[in-house]
Length: 152
Image (cartoon, rainbow, N blue to C red; front, side, top):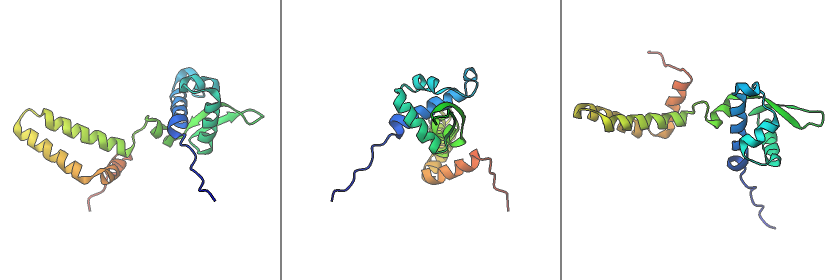
């Protein structure tokens, strides 16, 4: 008996490019916020059969909403979820914002005008790096979500 091989990954090669095209077109006023499948095909850069397969997967995953014809074929896209916006890069993710914060701290430490200022920025950058990406992402998640802990 042979061990079945996993299916090839289609997220980065098919589904994500189609999701980005849909999200981009939904945000464009020219499409009336509901682009047709025919507009998504050239925007994604993929052949129509791949776009159709990706679109079905994205609908099944709840990332996009679509109108279908009587045959059940996707005609146009009417909405995208918040998670779709994050995956497409339109909305921040905790990990991405943590990385941006670390980059900013490094840049400030490098370009500080005085040694005192450089030392302070360096200490803050080092402390942030020591926190690590997991706890940093949790912190950024709270900041993105607007959560501010109350003093006890």
